[in-house]
Length: 285
Image 1 (cartoon, one colour):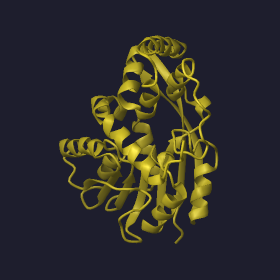
Image 2: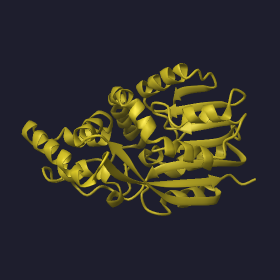
Image 3: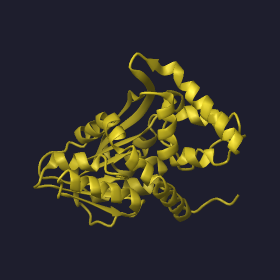
């Protein structure tokens, strides 16, 4: 198979995330609550405060851009970017419901930011950068649009073996399909999972004061069925793999995924471990 161009990769991702936009809106309140700790950590790592102009990359259905907007107040402003217009439509509805007039959302490519140099006081990004086909180029663009002394705060997924929340369905699907080894150079969920991957690219771009931490947490569900249903609604990469199964295989895989969750049972439900790589970096003064 011929290697895809960056433009083809981006277009494929645009289609994937638009396809699952309805699922994200369906599960919106649940995941806003489950991932609140990450949003607040990004706000802190970006050193947000009142009156700032903030850029959020890969906003999806609105986070952490909406929390950014609440933090910087009415005298500040937030621009949230994403490839998927349908995801951003949900983000706009949420901003309206929250009464936030200081945040706007637009579709744009992170590797070619349509802003003047030194335009922003901070940049945040949650689960976006590992899907980019040209991460070093994006890092250079982020540095360009930040003002001197400003911070980038980013979250990407850490190692597969520390993320049962993500790996359970992939492990089960591998029992039915002979999946090739993932291309380590290709965009994907675990593209920036190794320690120093993202931090090294940011340092190469010219960032300083780099700080990296593996942040351990969990995502909680009332049942294995709820876990399965949420994945099938929102996880575009896993949807793409599941689509390769026959109907009989899909039924069997569903049963195995649901039963695999039992090992994470607690008295109040199921707690599936996640590990997130949190990276903060500063543009030199």
